[in-house]
Length: 404
Ligand code: FEO
Image 1 (tube, rainbow, N blue to C red):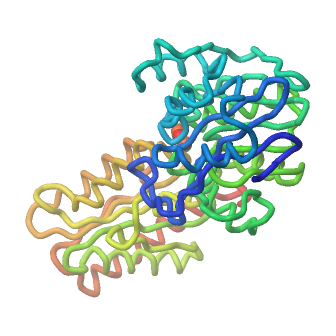
Image 2: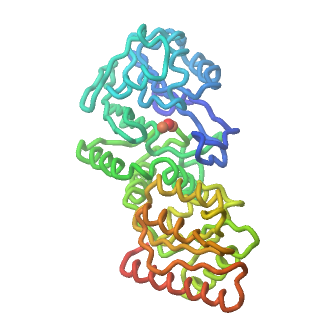
Image 3: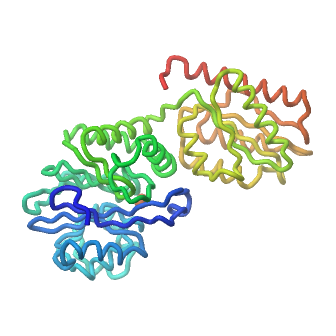
């Protein structure tokens, strides 16, 4: 049993086996589905867990109190990693009310059978519910992560139950962020944000603004994935990190992402790296056969330059490159330079495909794309190196006066 504050308990589940988060992103160490119980004159459950973890959550809850004594369930977000077990918990607890946002109500009706018999009650930003010694304030956060998402704030405990916001894919026995190193945490937060939350960065800035405007006193942020932030230092850290992520301030660093058939495009990638190195630009080469697209996005998070290479295949690019470009475009990274390169045999459309996708992502392409016929020779590799150096200079110019 884990009491995170007086009469407030973590009743979630740790999924150590999950590596496929939501069907599109890598969760290298698994994840958690956090749910919380607040005991007061009215007992309230906040969110549930992914299908398959019902028994774990039910047992955790039953250790603290009989589940049928739950009065209210709050569903901050209907995505199935948090709401899948709602039908079972409604059946088990028979709550007086299930609170959700107006969009949450729509989503519940679209996801579940039997909702006609459920005591759904919609709440909006500014609404509050008294549960005895405490009040729950609701704050809608549309698109963070879905249109239905909302936060629950309990001023008496200075506690923000934040659902997807401020989460990380961490599966561990620790429940608090201060129990693991900040470096590890920063990486996990970067990975989660840049694969899940990045397209909604404007909404993140709106929410941070709302939190500031409402003058919420917060000394604990309890997300629905990963570790809980307790104390001013941790809360300040996570709010600051989200602001930084959402502002998309990049560093003077590059990532060279590629796939290759017979190592020609790979040789070009290495030579471009040499050129970047000569301009003192730190860089990483990421072969898409060895690196999952979400691991690449975690690297893109800090890089001001993304160079993408593929040989031409059937008038296009290799499938992993095509998939990566589509994935990155959907995540809408901003403030970055891009570059395209690749080898070809006879038609050479790879450059146009890559360049068009980088432009559609919103990147500026400061140098002409470079293609090499079949196998790069010494002079070709020199051209690649020159391309890397020119890109390095363009990145330095872009970053001039900007602090890392
Ligand atoms: Fe963790 Fe949008 O679900």
